[in-house]
Image 1 (cartoon, rainbow, N blue to C red):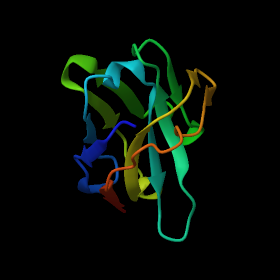
Image 2: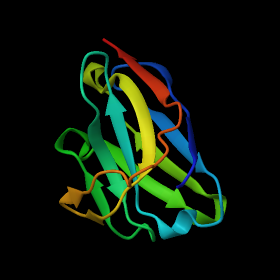
Image 3: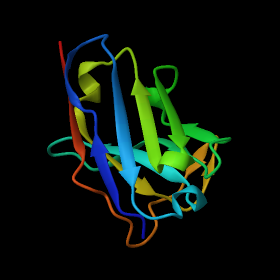
Image 4: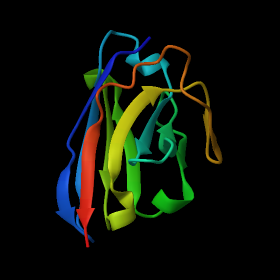
Amino acid sequence: QVQVAESGGGLVQAGGSLRLSCTASGQTFGDYPMGWFRQSPGKEREWVSCIDSSGAVTYYYDSAKGRFTISRDNAKNTLYLQMDSLKPEDTAMYYCAAVGHVTSWFCSDPLPGSSWGQGTQVTVSS
């Protein structure tokens, strides 16, 4: 599995921006499609955005389209999520994980045994 660690979260006002990072272990990071997921207290984890191994194909959940941008730097074993125009409903713990397949309209579940890291908290105030 790909071991990951998320960072970059924080407290921002509505309309603000954050850039999340996900650093991965090993030398095979570039072999895996990756995804960002989030979970709020009392709610189930949901997809946010995914990207294929090369970075050429991206997926965005409806709520993230036009506001978030996913990218990756395989040379640095790092996945990013640029979040602009943040809304209070974006408040959640954000996680990254390797996923099985990505298209522009679909992102598969995380790979079995994928690491979720500890997550990074994003809080958007009204």
